[in-house]
Image 1: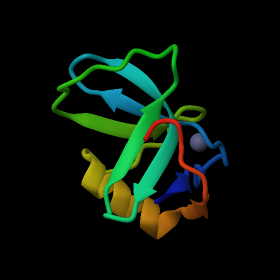
Image 2 (image 1 turned 90 degrees about the vertical axis):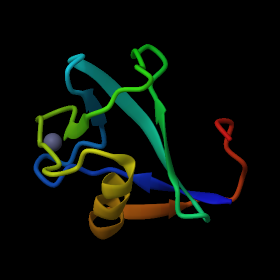
Image 3 (image 1 turned 45 degrees about the vertical axis):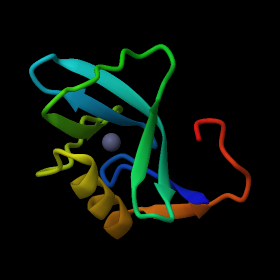
Length: 98
Ligand SMILES: [Zn+2]
């Protein structure tokens, strides 16, 4: 079982979050953020966006206004930020990404 976390930008209210891969300068649009009961989070990406594996350093920013989640460079700190600042949505059915 897991829940979805919905990103809402504190600056402009957009729900679009980008993962910015530093060094490669690749922007990956994040489609969904899932929070598992185990405490892990999983990001799924927009199909047309490139996803780069093994990228060491990332940043997360609003896709609309560029609002940067300061100091957030990995999934663990992203999770902490999301849990503190965002809504966790509940969904009962098993998601296709699982
Ligand atoms: Zn924004």
